[in-house]
Length: 151
Image 1 (cartoon, helix red, strand yellow):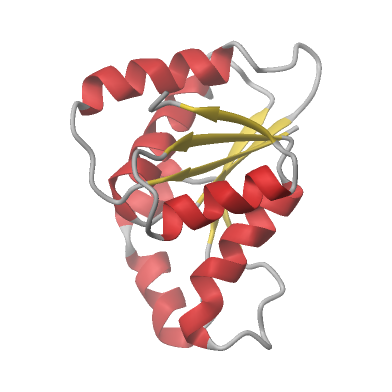
Image 2 (cartoon, helix red, strand yellow):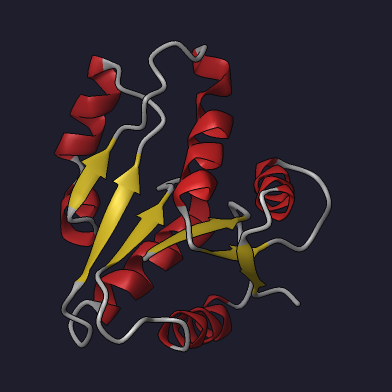
């Protein structure tokens, strides 16, 4: 099972949201199936998701937390590989097949790739503009199972 996340870059009430996020994940975890958590790595919601998923690994052994990066440039890879928080939170870094995508569209295409692969999308989208909203709208068009924590 693959669980992908999408949400706004800034958050209010992180502690309350962390509880809702953990409950949403735990109530949808399969009993005997490996789970991959796809995290984007940008903004407060992505960081919160990575931290909650990393914490869940302690009790749910058959899971992995993956950072899905939109860029494969040497400078970006050096930044990721040198960041101690990345090493602490993620099991590995995945680069989707985006080589032919212009850099300015890389995050959008990475988000679509994450949604395409997902069995479940957990979102925190409160308004109808921005990248998180576009990603949620894409998930709806793809008829993915969605939990929006802002509902």
